Image 1 (tube, rainbow, N blue to C red):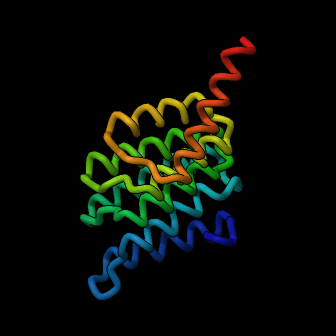
Image 2 (tube, helix red, strand yellow; image 1 turned 60 degrees about the horizontal axis):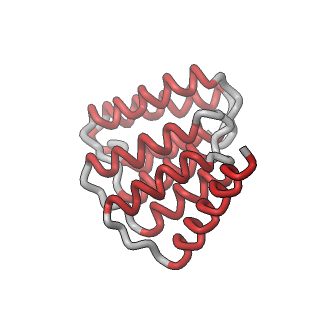
Length: 163
């Protein structure tokens, strides 16, 4: 996946096929996450093809009864926020929501990763919505997250003033 070529993608998918069929080398969440992350990081295939492959890999994980864990979600959120796809942040939000559905707590590092990533993309509006969601959830932000919240609120206030 690091080579970011169609040949390396085909090889990775063939290896995954082989691993899924052989009980002695069954893939785990790291295997799938590596492929997913490679798809987010690259711009060597079209966004439509990459999106289809990501959905397919997630379906394969479910079929193999492999659930992403806390670390997996963090890797996927970070990868989707750093994607060259301008809509990658939507995947980050979907992973974030999926954590809630799966009962995986969104801890300080989860909130920090999401908020700082949205800020880095200039998605201040979405970051502001997520701040509201954070406070509604009862999450008590750490000092570093409070700094992000302050920056988000300041940016939103200055945007309103300039409109």
